[in-house]
Length: 458
Image (tube, rainbow, N blue to C red):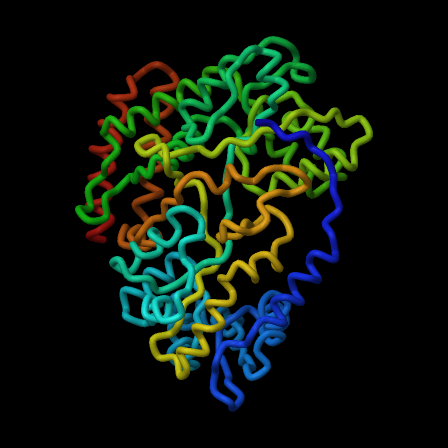
């Protein structure tokens, strides 16, 4: 069901009551003396603003020692040291109790045995892990071979936004939960393509130019396809799955149904006023039926309604997607925020766990909730924003790369530049009608494998 956009002021009293409830809840049992928790963060001020102040209201026997990641940045690049090597050196020297990691670092630290398992703490405290975003805990367990080594309290979700009024007007069935990119494109093609640039309706608005190569990138990512299988070091583009991706990309660029926010229009955000940006945006102005966007787009829609006197409200709908075409109950479009983990060498693992437990609690998520730019992984948190239902972001099960993207590091960097050159040439052949998609993919795989073999032995 669509939701009418409107503005609503968030109650200050609600936030105050949540903070008071958090501060007034019983403190976890810890030792009588002052406990110190050491961790890496960008700087102390931002840490206390985001986490530390609230936690110290609840735990007056705990103090934090912040090791700034600026030292990591200073080390990286010196004497040929990579960022990963610099990070490891600081962790080894400072021995922080808590590590705040991205998915790649998370995978690497589990593989190196540097993180403490959380399952014993969860079982001991009967800590609720059933109300997280669907699939989140299972996906995090995949990193650790069915053991849990970290938790994340926020994620960045994607959904299909649609103008329900346009769908009704043109007699088109609206998007639905679990919709795939192929189905989105087919829905978009059911809208008329006639009219001038200033007045016509578009089936789909896009932040990027609808060129062939970009469409291949987003459709293959949604399907979890990889150019190279790192386990065999074989180029894997001459397959039925890749063929479907290229066919859909060709169909997309030939349909004329997508409005792209070209670079000049995107510069409006930086060079002109918000009004210029809003009025140049076809979805905001009611001239595009759909757009695939993150949760950050919702506050922009709300602001546009408030700032533009000539804004015409429309019935907004959100559908869960784009989904993985091979498994429509899941999506690869969502990404995790920071993962909180405990150093295997932590001096006080119990105190570290209390902090990790707090940051990933429902209470903390409710207090820290502000808007959908970053969504909270706890399902019980506020799932409305100015009357807009956010359920679409929580409907599909999250799918993450269990290697955290680290498998790609095994592939020589020079290969990708060479493959892109091959791919660009073959795409031109496809667009010019000189080759079929099947012929082009076969050539990409053959030449790509030769390039990979050469790069591996250089």
